[in-house]
Each structure stands twice: as C-alpha cells, then as structure tokens.
Amino acid sequence: MAISERLQFSENDNNGKHHRWSAMLSLKFLYNTPLGSFVTGWRKKREDKSGKDIVLADQDPTLDLDPLRAQYICSIPRAQWFKGVLLQGYLVHPNILRGLDDFEVRDDDVFIITYPKSGTTWMEEIVSLIHNDGNPSKVKNKLLNYRVEHLEVGRPIGHLRHLRKLKSPRLMATHLPLPLIPRRLRQGKCKIIYVVRNPKDNAVSYYHHHRMSTFLGNYKGTWEDFLHLYLKGYLVYGSWFDHVLPYWKFHQEHPDRMLFISFEDLKLDLPGMVSKIASFLGRPLSCEAIDAISNHCTFEQMKSNNMVNREVLPISDLFDMTQSKFMRKGIIGDWKNYFTEEQNIDFSKLYNEKMQDSGLELIFDPEEIDNRNNNGATTTTTNTKLDNMQAGT
Image 1 (cartoon, rainbow, N blue to C red):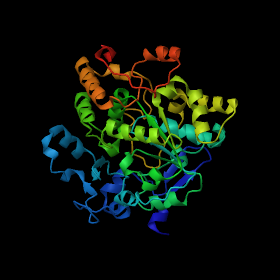
Image 2: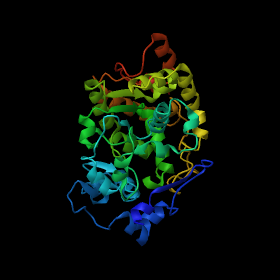
Image 3: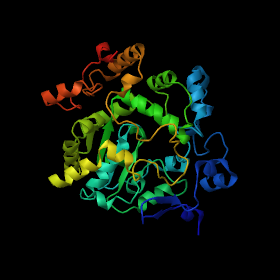
C-alpha cells in the first residue's frame, strides 16, 4: 500500500468517538521527525524551486522593520508567504497551494468562505444539515471535517486529488482571500456563502484561537501586541479589511452566486437565516426541518457536540484546549471585555477610513440589537460610521 493511501482518514462510526489517521499522527510527528518530513514531502529549503509564489516567511527582507511582526511570524511553524499572503505551514502544503488555481470547480459545489473566526464551523454545520434534509440524526456520528472539506488545509499527500474524487455535491470551505481562490471558483456557477463577523469581536476570537492553536505557534504575546498585528494586517490570512471588502464587492456584482451573511445575522435570527440559506442553495426546508437545524445549531449545542467542537480530531495535537476552547463564547460584544478606550478609538478610526462608502453595516454592540429589530433591518445593508461613543467605555 502506498504511503498516500495509508494516510487516508480511518473512521470508527460505531459510537462517533474514534476518528483518527491510521498512523495515529501528530503535528510533531508529521513535521519534526525525519520520517514525518519524508511522508509530508517537506524539505529544508529556503525557497520553493518552482517559483517565488511560495516562500518561507522568515526570509521576508522587511521582517525587522517591525519587531512585533518579526516575532509573530517567526513563532508560527513553517510560516510561508503565498502570493503575498501569510499562511501557516502545518497542513498547508506547497503542493496544495500550487494546484489551487487550476482546481476544477463543479456547478453544484458549495463553498463557505470566511476570514478565520467569523463563524466558519457554525455555517459548515448549518449547510451540512441542510444537505441532509435538516435531520441531525444523519450526521450525529460523523465529524464535521468529513462532511465539509477545507480547500487549502488538508492531508500532506494527495489532498487535491482527494477533493476531486469526492461525490457531488461537494461542501468545501476556505479562508483564502479572493485573489487566491481557484479561478474557476471566481468564474463558475457554484454557490458561495461568505460569513463576516464584526472585526472587534473577530479580533478577540482570533487572539484566543492563536493561543490554543499549535499550528499558529500557541501565541504567547499580549492582547495589546496582538491587536497591533491585527490592525496592521500582519496575521495569518492577512488583513480583515482586505479579506472582507473584495468579497463584499463580489457579492454585490454576483448576488445570485454569493450569499453574504454575518455572524450577527445568525445570532439575531437563526431560524430566519437557516431558511434564507436553504433557499439560496435551492433546498427549501419545512418549518419542522428549520426548527430542527436551529435547535441543533445553537452555540450551547455546538459547544457540547464532539462532532463539531474540534475536541475529537484526526490529528491529536492541533489545539491546546487548556488555553481556550475552540468554541469559546459565541456572543456579540465580547470585545468590550478587552478593548481599552484608546484601543477602541484607534480601531474605530481605522474602520471608518477603510469602510467608508462600502455599504456594509455590522453590529458591534448588543444594545444595537433591539434598535435593529424594531426597524426591521438586517446587518448587511448600509454602512454606519463607528464613533467613539460606541466604545462602551
């Protein structure tokens, strides 16, 4: 049997508790041992020989211009630049990146696209249930990562080949910015769901995600330093603004292909959003099915569901759950527990500069919810300027 075949996921679905790679793999084995390096195909070279699109991030000649940026990049194992975007190195193999642009996209594919920590897992579970007729019992013993595959993150050998062999309709997710997704995804007919989250809460969630994620180096810095990196767009997957705004424009140009929905939309009206998503996908559901999905996908249910909460994974050491849970709070306005008044002023100034005239409005404060509900408004309609009064200080 070939190595790539032995690396296929093995499952024991008798009780839904044992999902693992046949070799009981860990990140340390895959990337820090001679055998693991041979298996994954990594080489200790400073630059990919096929061109300059993929370069080890510590070779950035501007690295020392910002000490915090340099420290952050060097803390991420095998961090790499791909066409100018910083990516983690574990499980994002150069072979995957090189094959992305020519990846074949089918008309019945469904892609979920997000900036990290914007509600990706939540939307994946919702879409998976919609494709299973709103029946949670059909997925209760199958890990979410087998139901929704990630485009750029996967097995080190044969990942794109594995995706090509999946039966239709394929459900896939990615965090890649618009210029980096397959060109056939930009040009094709398949459905895309983009989930956005207000960047203040997103920054807090991404901070905790960095602390718990081995593949992101288990961030040891302070919240203040992390916010600096976030505002500068120095983090893995780049700037929130550079990610969100191009997709927002794409949605405006192709509303039939892309549903643009916010984390806050889901929090305010989960049944209504489930119905909207199902209709967009051409899979309208009964009221009973919508209720079943909504009840199954509350934050409390998701947090306790081992099929989605990342506490059972094929690789043993992806996350350090002693630092933070993958599903931590799932609320609107947690940023108020972290932002100082000065940080909020700086953030709001940048937000107004970047988002002016975009036509995109997001909820930052739970106190806004009643006003929006009374006005019958949704969160992704018109742009509202953030002022310092919204600081909650």
